Amino acid sequence: MRGRRRLRLPRPRRRDRGTLRARGEPALHAWWSTLSAIERDLTKQKLFADARLVHSVQTKAVECAYNYYGIEASKISDRWGIVLLSLAFYVLYTVWYGYAILYLFEGLGMRLSH
Image (cartoon, rainbow, N blue to C red):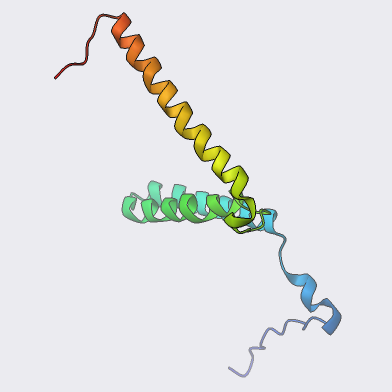
């Protein structure tokens, strides 16, 4: 114990303390790359349950964080017009698409009956 020296890292100066944080996108890319390598290594070792867990974390946490990075949260009540218009368009488009499929199958000679 006498011959060992403890590694001492320099403490950041007071003005630099806030700049040591990682930027969002490179940090998420690093997480993605690291988890991909871990998953590959676990698969090679035939630890499939552990590899599945790492893959689940990668797809459900890191991928979602990357997809929504930079998007600010807002109240839905602030944009009620766009929400209402989107919902109405979705319902009309779904009904229109359903009738198109119905007429397509009727044209092929299939009938829906009880």
